[in-house]
Image (cartoon, rainbow, N blue to C red; front, side):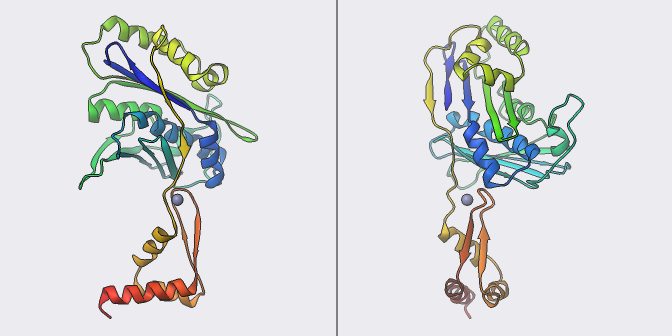
Length: 290
Ligand SMILES: [Zn+2]
């Protein structure tokens, strides 16, 4: 469930989400290691936190590319609060860091964070910043500050248990209008600093209680939504992906008896029959004027 709204005459906006099942679904779909679950989970929570602020048709995608062993983390959200995502290396494992935590920044490494905002217009809006820490929440906040001039706080936590994802949640606060009273901003900053770890917070409190602790007062009118892992891939799109290949490659697939297309976002496998491959070969030949 995601909660969102504004405070102080819309000068500050906030969102808070608890999405244990969504991150667990991502873990199962991609057969993620514990560490990969935490990394992708954080990125998915970050994408979900932004979803209430998107335009109606907007698709918001975050690409984190670093020199660490996970190589790549991609998460996407839409204004209906649906999310999806994947990582470059789902099996990544590293020793716990010096604080006894999953080494997220070690898995990510040094690199860049790129946000693509596709508003359904001809050219998507693309902006890139260097990674600040590789811990993801801080990196997303840094992106908003540098690329969109929106001072932000993102608090994101994913806790794993032996059985899978135990806790996945986060909160985001953004200053939209800097004429907001400084004392209010300082109070929020102070409150955030004194909070326990995010995963602890989400174990003991619900998102509304956490928001109240952040603002130091009840947040008033709050809207809600349901966050889901959702992918819009289908058989037709899988066939289109084959059509992009060279004619020789498609013919090779047919000789081997089957084509298989796996959706990178959700790991669904589409088996394309030899008959369908023949149709695709004919189509391809037509395109090529053969
Ligand atoms: Zn898919």
